[in-house]
Image (tube, rainbow, N blue to C red; front, top):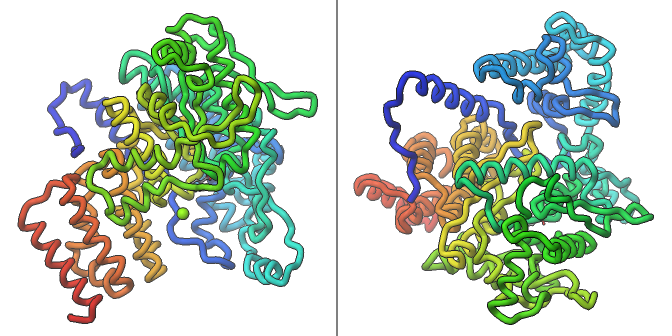
Length: 583
Ligand code: BEZ
Ligand code: MG
């Protein structure tokens, strides 16, 4: 079981550093954008949440609207160079944080001004508060005006009725609002993207920054690069980000996409080692069934990339793909087609790992069963063999076992602020499932990382850090759970889901600190008023939540004293009686 390290007394100089790091963490939690309620079909968003969304939209450059990031405009107006550059300049962390806080406060006030009194008021406020030139901020607020108007109307119900009548529904792109505000208005026929356009130039550029930070983080923790990594790639993510996950995989391998005369990304080219200045990483890719179906040309591209890298005449210590492929061919007398398989998914027509169902239904005894199930579901190879024959889901269990046995780090990209790793059971079924499978096959727990495309600065977090952040920002945050409880029955179900999904990270990856379960119990079960609210709104979910806590204890993920345990058991029994109509 993981627990926070006991704090030790540190020398004064370092104590200042620790206080600063703590402060940074608090800021991170405070600034994290969280949904404070569920979307109600057919209902426009409320103005408080609208202000948060507009602030996020305004924090990015919007070249398509001729608008620059408001954070940069304010930072420049105050003479701080630029908002993101401040983080890389050689100035003290205290000054840097103070500058960022000042920028953030002015931007937030500007947005509030806009929501309350309109564009002109906001433009004039920013000119006074931070010398932002009106002609530059006007562009930003013109965009925010359009978005704000589109957020105030909602024709989802009308469109649904039209769809049921078989009438035409105008199309609209699929993304989240911060990544692509042109998804508005909602209630349109969502379309994906052209897979041949993936990864886009923007996604590829961003992919480099993420891959570099990811490898740097591993290097800092281990003093060397990982020889092999396992990545999870999802369809909807790569639609929304135009292929950021794909771009990250290509960067780790050290290749770039090559576009043909029709501008389709159908080829790959090796990035020279002198430019890369690090080894090429062996990448095992598990793609979802949705990705496999939507991104068939991309699956081919990824497989092509692995084969290209395996064929490069480079020293083994700078090309781990080639090193591993050659070792396997020699050791097992197999051919290239067996040794170079790296793109796996479900059997054709199949979807999902079922790891989430096994966890939710408590249908397992040993943790490693979960990783074995993952491999059973996902061990189907896709790509092309050395004769150019397409491989469409050939069962390749041994190849997958071999590939996973070398993995030292696992990783998944989070594409949106709307859904995090404890909101749905899919993150733990995939990233948790593959990490669990690696642990058994490599006989060592991999480093597990996530990154999100939610802020402008690339941030790589360990799984444990991400679980803590999400727990503090959502599950244990009164703003979040009170927002959920406004939805009554469904809201309690959401709280219970979060607890169960958190439990999923214990089951698959042992990544949940004991204090998290203690605080969940304190907040939702041992607070009598809260327990009454939950039981009145949704006794089924209240009961499941208590049972999940008992299961966390029973399986050894949460140490708890006997009195507390008895109290939990009593509450569980009383809820059960109530559900069965005994009470
Ligand atoms: C996907 O977009 O590929 C995906 C969505 C939900 C669950 C798993 C995968
Ligand atoms: Mg689902």
